[in-house]
Image (cartoon, rainbow, N blue to C red; front, side, top):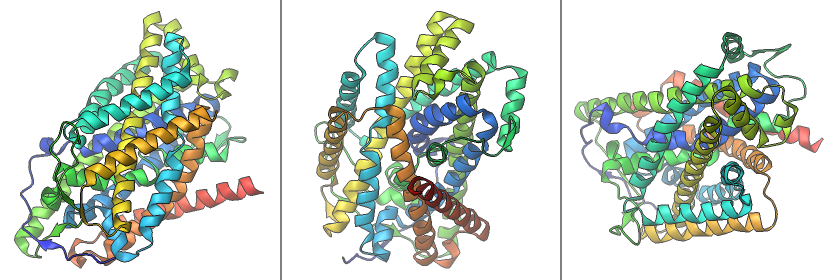
Length: 460
């Protein structure tokens, strides 16, 4: 596998902050339908808010991880996967395996379909299959793929977050807010950090999904390129085979000469995308997790039916309808279903991008019709998901937990690899500061420790 040297080009000027908004909505959307909407509220409704510190820690770790992924693409104008392959030829094989296997379990769309089917009294398996096909059509027909995904997530987040905020403020009591504040510091009812009996796999799953999760964090690298951040401005975009203009996309990127002008321009880029990611991904993400968990706690905490998988969401909707108006319960269920649907769409986009790029790296094809590969892999994944349903593996929470535990280990691996690439392939002046290195090392140890502990517990 031989790579061409990076082209040398000037660093483009950084636009104003509001023009940079976009990639973080997509990465946030990758987590909304798993950790934020399902796993953390599920745990909170069963074990209380004393475990919510894990969500704060998880999304904070992911903020630093995502920024290091962004760093590489901002500077080199190519995805982080090309950087990995420059270091070790075997890594594209790992990312094929560790992306496809954890995400063939369609727990997110199963959750969306279950909620939607409950509202309209439909068969949720038929709804699940239909939703997967609809997602495939949406992604296939949008002229510019990135714009389709970004716009969809902006709309869903723009509707979902304010609605959840208002419901939580209206329904939660003062004591509920106090419990939430204590839970951020690990203080629960008669426990500290973790209650007795909490399934370690479920807690690890929620930790991994406090944000995107698994290899999906690495998709930030693609969105940096396609939004045109920094040196990514020189990269091509994936467009629809039907409605878009097909273009060759060179996987190898471009960098710049180290001089004061370029360094100052890059610093401006770096500061602004840090702010963008902090406001959209970290702040909006953490508020959403906390409020959804608070809402679940204040409405259905202690209900013995909560333990039965995704049913806690339906219990929550019934309680909301009782405390407010009947239509509010239906609105809540449709909102949850929409958020989950949007997440599944973004997951399929991200995994198709990741698998496509690593297939091309294995093929040693650095200038190829990426579009054709992307859409072939997208539909292969959709068909695989449909087959999972046909074989009868369809319990949403079980599927989510299987996927998340596998993804936690994948995060352990790619966190260490990202730091290694940035410390060895980037100029010394462009490498992460010591405090960022400490944050990444802590995340690496944390995900690794929890992954191996979970494996130990279940193999005992």
